Each structure stands twice: as structure tokens, then as C-alpha cells.
Length: 144
Image (cartoon, rainbow, N blue to C red; front, side):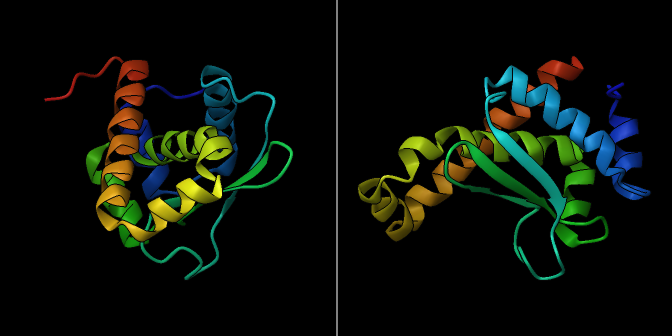
């Protein structure tokens, strides 16, 4: 059963960080975001594999993708725990990237996105805001 409290999420981040609970959240959000036809693998990132982010997604061919999450104790994860939405927020953010991968990986769009830091920042900020709104709505939390 998916825990539905901020306290439970903070405990998840600060204790053993059970990957099975995160896989339950992945299953829930895949269905909600209409990604249930995708084969999405979820795993902890190796040290240094994603040095500046709490998570990253890698969309492969034929509706296959992997989401990598920083292991608890890394600075990015501690920052998420302070927000109180933790790994669920990162998971939804990365699923949004997977949703867009069909058009985002077009070479023309990719060139624009990769060469313009301003567009990149706004793109990430939009995913952050959308993921936060979705997670807050599921948990019945309002933004202060």
C-alpha cells in the first residue's frame, strides 16, 4: 500500500529508502500519466552517475526507459526531504520527461534544447512545478 503522508516520505528518505515502495509509486504514476504501456525500470544510481540531480530518466527505444535515483544521503536527496515530497516528486518529474521523449528526442528540438541554457532552465522548472502540483494533489496538500 502506498503511504500517503509527508512524514512517511521523510522517513523513507532518511531511513532504508525501500525501492519496493518506490516501485509501487512508479506503478501508480505510470497508470495516472498514461504510461502503463511503457516498460520502466527504476534503480539507484551508482555514486557519481548523476552528480547534480536527484534523479534522471533515460528513454530508450520501443517504450522502454530507466529512472535513476540518487541514494539517500546525497545532497540532492536531502534537499528533497526538506521540501517534504521526496522521491515521489522526483519520480513524477522523471516520468514527465519520459512522456515527452517521443517529441523531445527529435534532432531539431534536441539541438535547440541542448544549446540554450535559458530554455533548459524553464523546461526543468515547468516539470518541477507540474510534478509538485500532481504529488500535492494526490496527497491533499496545498502549497503555502
